[in-house]
Image 1 (cartoon, one colour):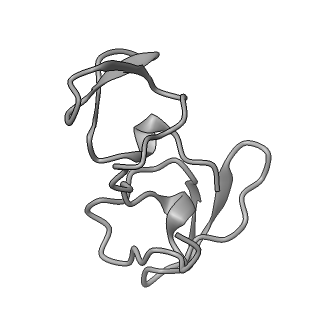
Image 2 (cartoon, rainbow, N blue to C red; image 1 turned 60 degrees about the vertical axis):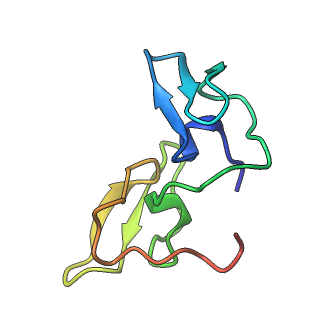
Length: 88
């Protein structure tokens, strides 16, 4: 799994392209690589209940009472079924 700045809890978006790192206060591009201080945001793509996604980033969630299709990039910070994959 390739992690970007928008996968970090320390990232605060400004617009569709950039944001601010809450630690360094630097402006960073959303899709640029992360630093060593990354705090991974719970998202469907890093949950052990999320099935393989297609080319559009859509996969099957099997972590709740009913299986359902979802986007891999969906923020799961409030999801009761989210469990990080072991590959972190």
